[in-house]
Structure formats: structure tokens, C-alpha cells
Length: 112
Image 1: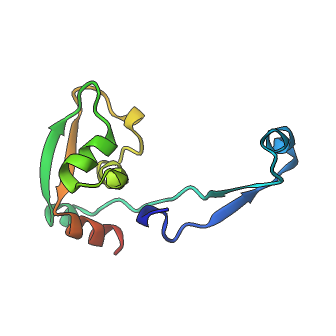
Image 2: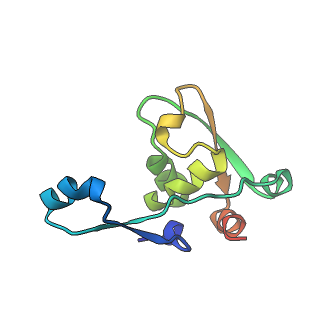
């Protein structure tokens, strides 16, 4: 599923409250990833990477920024994590988003 899901537990949802939903899907249970929690970066770690500033505007998406700067849209979550804004809905037009570079250094900070 990708490296952002490494070290996440898979939860099995078969609770009675979801019985109608499960039945409509023709399944007895749904497996899903647990909600991740990530430690924020220290100031020292933030200074160890180069940042490209991007001003958020209409049509921007994390996956588009990841594709542009990392060459891989699947790494959108790195931009979200680094900026402490978990989804596109947490960003408003005019907000300054930082794109941390280089990619290998950013990944090493995430997996420290």
C-alpha cells in the first residue's frame, strides 16, 4: 500500500452497528488501517532540510505538489506531515506551504 502505511496496524471492523453496511457490501467485515500518529519535527530537524515555499491557491492539492517536487504523487502525505496539516481541507488559499527537500533527507526524518 505504500511506505506511509508501514508500521500501522490493520483493524478489523465487524461491529454490529455496521451490520447493514457490511451486508450491503456483501462482506462480513472490513479491514482498515488504524489512524496514524506522527511526532512533529524538532526545530533542529526543520533546519536540516531545505524548504521550497509554495503559496496555496485554487486547484492546489498535496498530491500535485508531491508529483511536481518529488516525482511521485503517492508522497503527498510528506508535505501534509511536514506542514502539520493532515489534509487539503486544512489549507486555505494564501497559506504558505513548505515543501521539504531533498526527499531522502525528509524520509529519514520521518523514519527516525
